[in-house]
Image 1: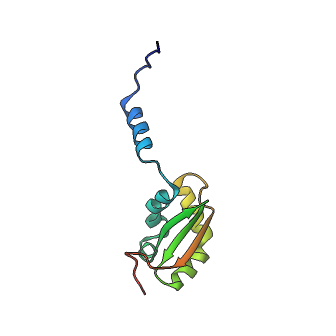
Image 2: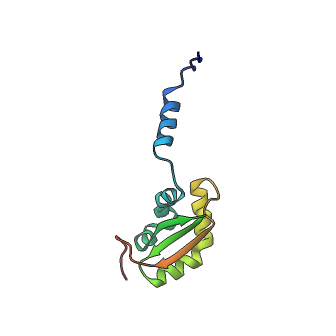
Image 3: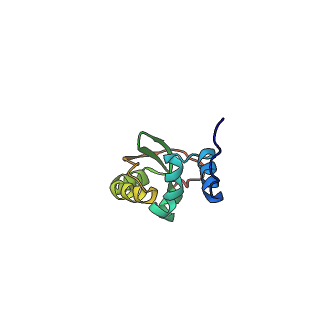
Length: 105
């Protein structure tokens, strides 16, 4: 016969349930942090679209934005990692590509 566990505080139980239902992915964390980290002007022109092995791909509305973000990458990576709370983003890969919602300039 197994022993019953002691009751847990409701907040702790709900936190565990939430974590199991919607595990955070690095891409989701970066997407949430992006507007604050990059700024609203950049967020209208470029957005994180995929992640693999710590490399986050940023789709840019125009080549000039991809070039600008390449130059800003070290600062953006530092700010993203600070926002996420761990050094998960290793590299940004900025590409010009169609993505719904991005302005074409």
